[in-house]
Length: 149
Image (cartoon, rainbow, N blue to C red; front, side, top):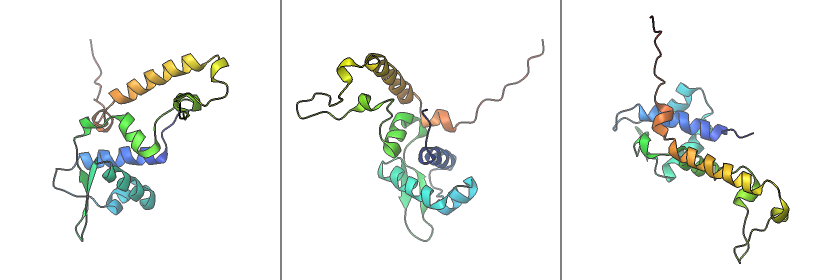
């Protein structure tokens, strides 16, 4: 089962909160954790990773905190997951470590009946995750109104 981990979930939630702030306002890790009701220590680790990747900016000092460093539309879900979890992969053979000669080191790859289908699905999954931006995730869903006719 593919699922986003807590780290990725916390990142999405925190970046959603930060994207709602104006460009100058800062939010501390404690403020974010408190408002989101999440673990402060795990959120702090996630925020460090996001800052290292250049998605958010960390401002030190007594009145320091975090703010977005880029626009939410510039961050793909694939990039974000990659920073926090590493590349998304359906199976080990998709991202199998290759030997020095560039050949796959998987022992059953040559006779595996699902190698090609798994690789096709992997490409589609990667393309989809690359097409989804943080902006799409953090924007509130449109309110559907009942149509009377």
